[in-house]
View 1 (cartoon, rainbow, N blue to C red):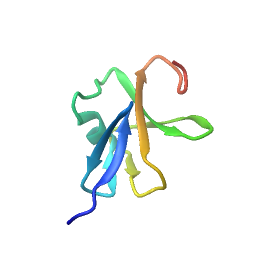
View 2: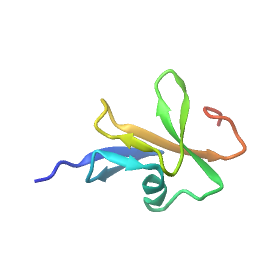
View 3: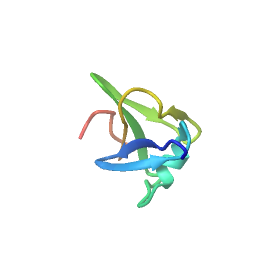
Amino acid sequence: MAKKYKFKIENDTHEWDTQFIKGSDVRGVPPGIPDNMDLFLKVKGAAGRLILNDDQVDLEDAGIEKFYAQDASSEAGEA
């Protein structure tokens, strides 16, 4: 059986079939992240890393990658 890679969007856990996922793929996971929102990857002890549609994230890294969306006019790490 093929390995599944887990990641989170906000607090919801999802599975992916390959080791790498593009920002556009994360945005497309239902219910979806609209274009007027920025997509970030949570980074422990630092501001989130902006993920563009063509950016690839390695889901093999230690832990579960956690993505979140913010209004495009706000700064990473702000509520």
